[in-house]
Image 1 (cartoon, helix red, strand yellow):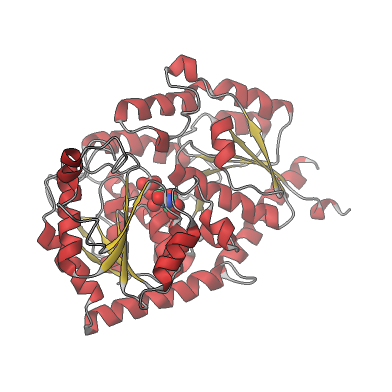
Image 2 (tube, protein in one colour; image 1 turned 180 degrees about the vertical axis):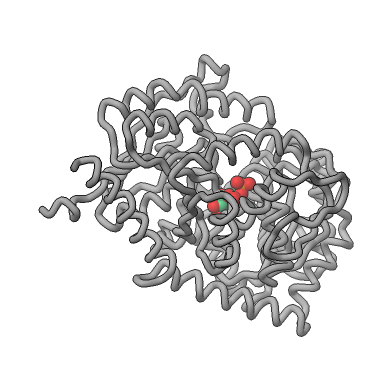
Length: 471
Ligand code: UDP
């Protein structure tokens, strides 16, 4: 075989959180589907929930449960419900797993490592092995650009315009200091890598942001997504991240009985724990809007052990009996739901995966950011690309678990839902634009599409590295 044709050997090290792991493993699948040898490095419980594929190998290391004081099998952020335990997962992943992963990689080095940006130590390893190192953090490039701008410029308290930015974008309140202190050094460390891998297609972030990023940082970014589009069959789409608590069949037959664009899908990702009072406002707002819905709530809600009294703290009396929608208590087959023609809007926390999955499905969004990159994603959705409306959340939370925010009242929720679901010129324009981006997203991953071509270019880039090292 011509040396240039020889497949690459790539190691992927995803962070132990659904929002990082699902897209990075789907991106690994893009490489594998081009015939490259992909190994995903993770822990046993995470390996179990990975998309089963014969295309790649999975290498596991025991999760240091005892050292961090977590029960056996709790190895992912989605399996914990508070900040303190999420920190233990973080320490296990970023510190305690370092040594075993490093010795494995050194014993049998790949041509390239693709690692979550939380694993900063990969820099030294890649340098030692003289191989390229690519980083992934699950953010859009738009949000990375916003964070880079905020990092470079002093911003005061209160509303601010993102400094030195291609669009005039106003953010209504300042990001928390703790969040900046955590994320900014990671973004700086990532600049030393050979480039960012982005789960998006270039057209949604926009060429202007790619140019802006490369010009202001001198760092490269490869748009390879939408990652979720690597999944073709209904089963592949349903089994992402965790086993769903409802059958796909049940969701689809419920949706099949509804009119096109008549249902609102409500979900706040894999890590969002609103207080009961906020859930109550959501229930009232959705009911008042008059639209049917699928609403995903945390698993513990509505379990048998929950008394009527406890239930009434987050659900109005008789809510379930009135059957205005379907409540899914736990993990939902999100991509399958979003792709159903009955779904007309997505009330979302603007997690980047959820956003890009909605865009791929052509579903306009009602945006309710909670923390991290979500406030920037919201602006890309609403102000810059015109594919959603804002519910009016302004206060950043430090994390998904630590919610200090003021309640968003039911009438704001009802109004945002109506703005998108009632017939109006504005709603029609937003829906058309969402469908337009869906078409572009699907083309992007087809042969000769923008993400397809970026993947080809990236493969050549890594091959040039390998081939010049081999002389
Ligand atoms: N997800 C899912 N079912 C659920 C909740 C989440 O399939 O019930 C998936 C969702 O499709 C997305 C990921 O989990 O791929 C969540 O990532 P996102 O960036 O949207 O939010 P995060 O959970 O990181 O806040």
